[in-house]
Image 1 (cartoon, one colour):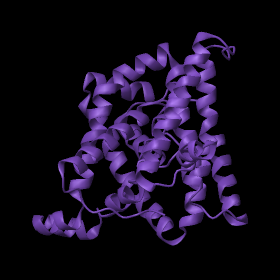
Image 2 (tube, helix red, strand yellow):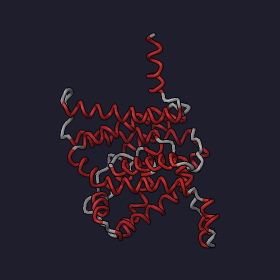
Image 3 (cartoon, one colour):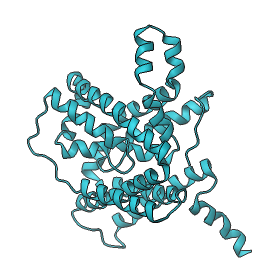
Image 4 (tube, one colour):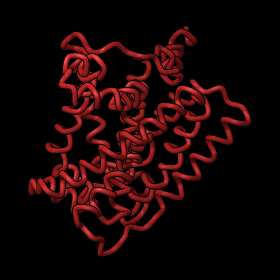
Length: 309
């Protein structure tokens, strides 16, 4: 299912990875949307997991031995650097803007991301051989995500560095999973608003504690996920699709709560929300078709003119 990619070699490949990272960073800012979903959509998911996994004992020995040339050959640093710059650019440039949009126009933000997720579910589901075991894995993933996104945020949370460290460990595991948002986990843990303000205020101590937790968490979790993808790919991907499916509960709840009611059909805001769902859906379907040439929606659209002749 996943096709391994060489390290980026051309400016176009670096630019693609930068914008992939930018999309991941933008998604992770929004509670209920996962940067892992964007990596999944844009075809870099397994490469990302394996790239993170490359930070192992071999990499540590090479670093301690000052064998930097061998270290750079061991780690796909070009891939990770281009992706990482895109993620950080989105976080630092969009955190304030998306905070304003989430506060003032949540319906439209979640409508667009909802369209992205629905299209992702459809695109990825065609690559799984559906049988009893994969359907059970799908149901388990959907149920888990549905319950997780329904949790209520903690009140009066502690923001000490050690708490931020542990929060980062947990959130990064969610952040890399399609459908479960790392920022939503921070929201549940009562850290989301504090972290956003730390980004805006350049609170280096708090951000460093969170970042160190993220590093430790992702190094451990990436090994588990990589093993599952390489040894039980069909079941693992079915669970990941389930995560995306279950996460739609959060999208629906946030969108409707942001409007304080379900918008009536025919209302201007409802029309715009539907338009944004369609735009998000078509964006993902088009990207997937450009990469795979086999997106079911785009194949259906391409066949329709021929059928009418």
